[in-house]
Length: 142
Ligand SMILES: [Zn+2]
Ligand SMILES: [Zn+2]
Image (cartoon, rainbow, N blue to C red; front, side):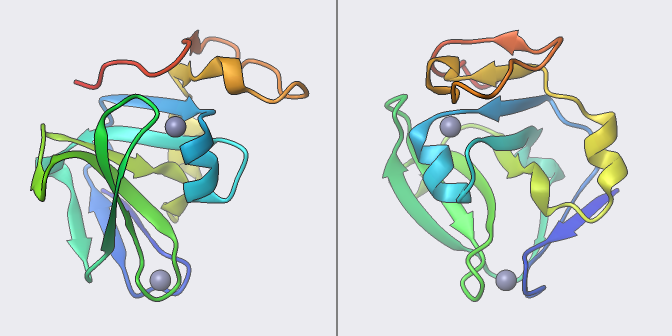
């Protein structure tokens, strides 16, 4: 089990620790939603996600054209996860979990990124990650 949560601790997140994919994204939306210069996320099956507490969902049409809802702690604002939506309903079974919310750093050490997305936006002083597929724009989610 991989366990994590938000900055203030009001929202707790668990999943089985098995990611379908681990990826870094350099898109502008990911910068805004994480407050950092890229995001690192695990794609997992929605059935494997356990959430304690009530995150706030913020809808937006992403650069990719996908309608996405990103979920944050309503009290401290930590970005927790995102998923594709059609209106208010989930679209597909994939959850994009923000990797930085997990408590045990070993989870991050053992799950290296398989891909970097929106590499055309990567900052000039950042090097590509060895072994990660370099992808222009978004990749299709399972
Ligand atoms: Zn919080
Ligand atoms: Zn992104």
